[in-house]
Image (tube, rainbow, N blue to C red):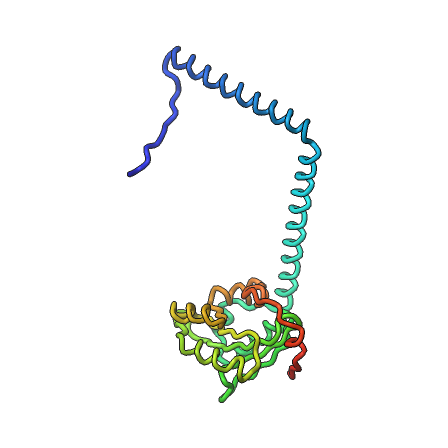
Amino acid sequence: MARRRIWLRKPRNQAEYAAAGIVALALCSWLFEAARAFLVFAGRHWTPLVGVAAAAAVAAAAVWVRRRGTARVRAERLSALRLTLGQIDTMGDQDFEFALRDLLVRDGWTARKVGQQGDQAADVIGQHPQRGRIVLQAKHTTVRAKVGSQVMYQVKGTAGPAHGADVAVVVTNGSFTRAAAAWGDKHRVHWVDRDRLQSWAEHGVALHDLLRLPAVTARRRRRPFAV
């Protein structure tokens, strides 16, 4: 059922003007009493109110500082490397893999391109001081093409056993089928589709922030990594 709209109209006669005046006077009286009650309450409890106000000010300042810091770091990343989706779409498979390596390096990873025949579903391998080892499988394709679940199965089967990875990611400039994305979410194979790729390559969001990758244990961080 559609909601009925309430329309306010101008009073038409003296009785309606008088009624409107009474309502306005009652509203003003209520606002005055509410303000007076608040002032009385504030006078009696000014210490906790000041504390709450101070805490809110500190929290707001912390949020502002964090956002400024995030924006500064993102700007620094983009000054080092920024790739638009248009640029990425014109790349070949090899150039796309090198681009993903360079983006990892920009984000603070040590990374190398390894993609070749018999690469066991790894095109780029990276190492991070806090995030551990990452394996990227690159799928450069046309804009409307979709990556299927089979790629997810392959990466899941080799990322850890063959490459010792803590994180497995499939990256495409296209998209993923619904089944592939759901399977990846369930089995911890991260996926970066066109929208996420834009956030990473073009907008400067670090991959580990984009995917919300957790820190790994110190023992796993100490594993050697050859570039």
